[in-house]
Every structure is written in structure tokens, then in C-alpha cells.
Length: 128
Image (cartoon, rainbow, N blue to C red; front, side, top):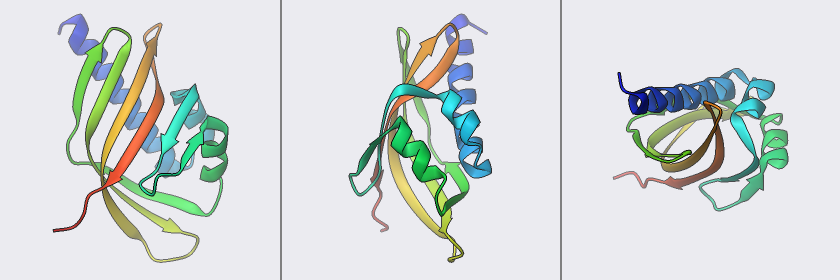
């Protein structure tokens, strides 16, 4: 395995840890994976900084599953870019589960071998 391959694997592991933390509602773990300068933009266009995003995750929205259908990775120095399709299944309060298919773009920064997500943008994929 090359050094570049190892960095890609570490980035994909960080993304899997982020997804697991969302489903497990592990806010402390998620906090460690997110860069202090995070901008998180949802499908309707609302954007939060890290503090606001983490506070929303303590609310009634529960992530049940995040299924990455496609993942493309590009590395540029200490920056990693992930894009692809994610199907998110969640529930608001005690409501019925709902799923949403999105195309996502994520920017991660590497610092001493640790990857932290600094930007997230999701766009809804219209059902065909």
C-alpha cells in the first residue's frame, strides 16, 4: 500500500466514523471529527457553523442510517474532497422513518494524520 492509499483509507475511515457518530448520536465523537471552522449546508440551503450544527443534533432529529452509494476521493495536499451519493434515513421525534437521497460534497483537512471535516454541502436527488 502506498502512502497515498493509506491517506485515502484514513480519510474514508474518518467519514465512516462521522456517519457512525451521527447514527449513534455520539456528539463528542462527532465534535472531534469536525473542524472548528465547519460550514454545514443542508438540502434546503440552510447553513450552520459547527456550534449550531452540533446543537441541532441534540434535538429531535434521529439518524437511523447513512448509506453511501458512491464515494469519490481526491487528495490535494492536506485537503481531501469527497463527493458521491448518500441515502439518509432518519426520524423526526416519534414520527415514521423517512429517507432522502442526496449528492454530497465534503471537504476535509488533514492535520498530523487526523482528518476533520471543514465543509459539507448536500443537494437532493429528485426521484425519477
